Image (cartoon, rainbow, N blue to C red; front, side, top):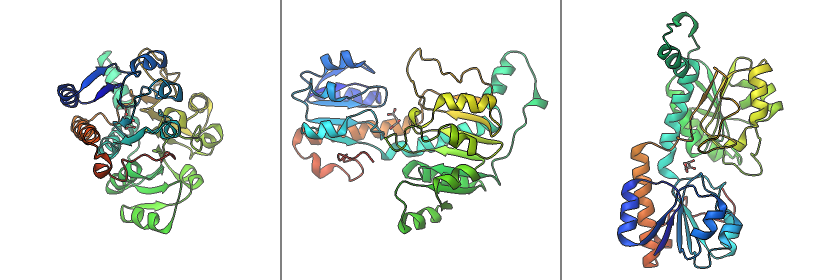
Length: 324
Ligand code: MLT
């Protein structure tokens, strides 16, 4: 098959695809380059950092399959792909655990000043007395988006002795029961915001969640609380966050793995603040997880070539018109 690998995926998967197919690789290309690259391609494999827009799709007459090597769908026009008869599949399962683990890395980094301590020590300082911080145990962790990733974070937090609250877009008694078995009390967004010492974001980015955390939400957060964004940059109004962290009275710190603007050379407006931890969208970047995602991408492409993709694809991998 003629494949465009538009994002960096596991090297073994790239090797396997290159062995069996006609592969073009071009990572994180802008739209004007993508429209050129996609012209004769039948399959595109991509992650975040590249946007498969309607305009890009309109330049791909031979395209039959989009493989999202991960979970987020905010960077692909699923409706337009579906209209054009292009099947969209994703590989969401293996990225949940690494994102949940990085959430804890950022939580610990925030409360125990890990990155700040490292920076100061490298500069020759020994500011032991200034680097205290709260325990996680005994505090309340709130999860906006207690789905595949959020519920893992909640289960981990409960195991650490935290009280855990969570909310989901479509709550029902079944969800409440399964969250309760992981130690998570299902509630509404407002309760999660106002009662949490740590507010963790794990929602997909769509029209309902764009700037879900804005100035008014930040003002309602518990005094002395922390925010962790593992979802998508657009879920948080970063201008309002900067304002809240510098002038507000509620937030003590924030950690962001995802940003309103991402990519090489982009400077976060929050970078000067010592109570902020920033990482470059590395939530899913655990080696083991990327290897599994890569293997699944190769399997899906092979199945597409043999014409039996629908038999292989799992319900959570099949992307329908409405992004979940
Ligand atoms: C995802 O949605 O799977 C993650 O954000 C990882 C990525 O694609 O970079």
